[in-house]
Length: 169
Image (cartoon, rainbow, N blue to C red):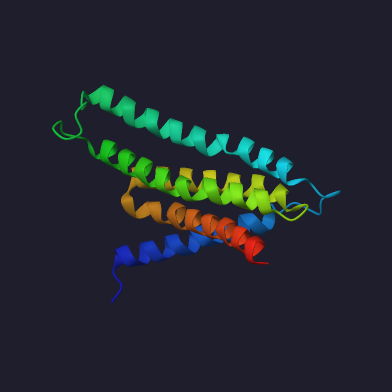
């Protein structure tokens, strides 16, 4: 029997999946004017990776400021507030998800078919939005992290899937 927690999680999964794939479909760029060399694709992708890095930096600063404000400098001994625990867990998960996204993005960019590299901006934007949604949802209530988590999973699956398709195709 599904209780309220399960229903909230399922609703979050549906919402996050719809956001990820809807965003990919809605913001997919039109056909490119011509082929782009692989080096150009890597340069574009590398430049776009500043956005996930900025998001992680903001999360690190948030955790650091929360520790400073409450004098909880020793995470093993000092008591942490609920906000601190949630912020730290959101940061840890975001580092893990970014560790999947970055190499997948660079692989996809190196292997991208002509014109497809323009999707790098869309995928990066969706990744950042999904991480923000996860972070804010987690800070409000742990159940509300589900849409951002599943959206991230879908974005990462899409970029890894694209790179694998290019390698195997």
